[in-house]
Length: 90
Length: 408
Image 1 (cartoon, rainbow over the protein chains, first blue to last red):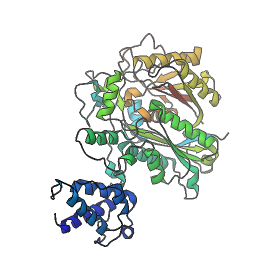
Image 2: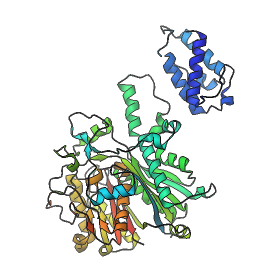
Image 3: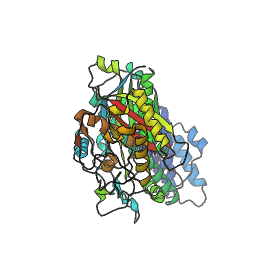
Image 4: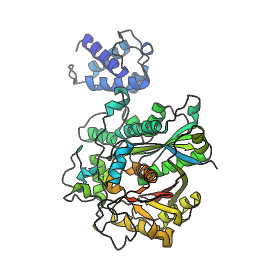
């Protein structure tokens, strides 16, 4: 999966769970800027685990501060999960 | 001690979700029990139920709100909003600290438990949705009422099985009596129509059999009764300190005059006579009334062999020679056993009966049982001025709760 695709899916998950349909979200947008509350972040993490068939560890989830953190983290997990189809499950 | 009155009623029930349609069903003995449509149970006894059929969550809540709310919490909030509207009460942010919430529920978010465990065990999902805990927690009904209606006073959730709502109302009554709040939104809510809950009840062999006519499945006190019918819904009252209600010229339905609570300290499922009798006596004592003054008892009357006999004997024990003069009915014959919401729905029907001067009937009464020898108001409502009434709720586990209400 290309990093562009990961980025698109991450942003879609953040927008859905933060209910941010009309808000511009880019790679360097921070969660603080989006006023993303903890429950919305947790739901985003849940969706991403489902979408990419990965498991995001608690400490990684806690340390995400901006969209780029998430995209990089997801890309890393996809690359380091043995046997995982790069197409994900979605 | 401060006095407490009922100034608002809100309901979401199989009999309808406004007071007029509820009363129409009750006064005409029209049962809302039918074949379960929302869920397929299989060949067991569980496919008769009292469902809330006219409920459209999207009409009441945003998508964001719904993502956090189990069906039982949705029922609770809608009933609470109707109760507030009915009472005409409003509160500023400053006065909100004097408004609390007390909600009973036997099951909490039963549908959320069922759906999440099914995904885990059956679909082998590796994880559960993060909003599952907020949806299923027992206090979700009280919490959502508090959040969406802006009630900032003392709030709690009560879970004493079938007595939950009655205990929640009793607790709210105490909260106002003792001055911890001026207004309480109090009642009960349950939405237990899930495969898991049905199977649990089926295993206890206390569910009414199908019969050929589902509307007549629940037959409390009738000689041919054979069990209870599970229902769902919510009812919420605005309880208000008497002077507070008078100052704003509120319409007063009735005074909550007594609350009796007792434990059998006996068997886990088999009801006693002594425990329920003590709860009734305590409620009457606090209301400062003698048995002769009680015109109506809304019975727990589940329609099981054991409950209805034990409750009859308990009424005899408390009322003595007056027992046969009291009008009794089990409105569960009409709305089924709404579990943790039952006590609130039944107290609401009781105060409506006081307003209308009509005793609700026990529907589906096909003939007297020698062990149930009181006046159960069989099949037809009956005119009667109701000065004092009590509403009985007796839970599995031997926890009994009774509320006494007085006409003002």
